[in-house]
Each structure stands twice: as structure tokens, then as C-alpha cells.
Image (cartoon, rainbow, N blue to C red; front, top):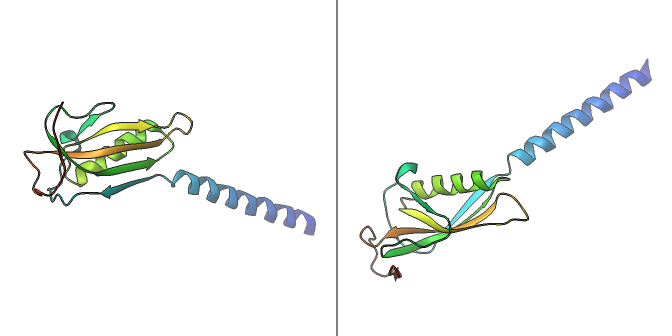
Length: 128
């Protein structure tokens, strides 16, 4: 009987530890945004944020910062980058690069169009 209790206790502890580890892994999703310009822009809705996967915007724009995302899924990383860009008031993100070796490891640049930019000291990039 004592051995049966010990076995059940060990199994329960292993189950709790396993669930904690799995939940911890599932919650490690993160998106970081490093602002490189002083643009002060009001937040936007996600529908207002452009996602340009492999090209720059066609109009003159200001690069506002750099995003990195680690979520376990490239689609989820792009969606979370877009949501954070909206919260930061950006017009969009461009040159999204997702690692093909580690799904969900993505980076992108944030931008606002020059017509919305408020800081004249920012680097303005002309459309080509």
C-alpha cells in the first residue's frame, strides 16, 4: 500500500511538472518593438496597418523601428507584429523575414508615411 501511494505521488508530480512545462512553452510567445525614431502617432486599428511581406512602401515613409517575434508560427508572429504596429500607431510593417529553420521567428521594420510623420529629425526614405 505504501508503495502504491509513493507511485501515485510520483506520477502526480510528473504530471504537474509536465503540464507546467507544456504551458510554459505555450506561453513563451513574444514580440519586441525597438523604436528608432521619435514619432508620436496615435494608435490605429489592425485593419489600418499594411503588411508588406517583401517590399518597401511605394510612398515616401519614415522607418520607426524594428520588430522581432518568436511565437512558434510564422502566421501568428506576423499577426502579432501587425497588432503591435497598430498599438504603436504605425502605418505598416515591411520586409518581413521569417526564419525557415525555426517557424515563428520573424522580424520586420515598422514605418509611417511621411505625410503622417511628426518628427523632422527622422530619416525619411523616398519611394523608388
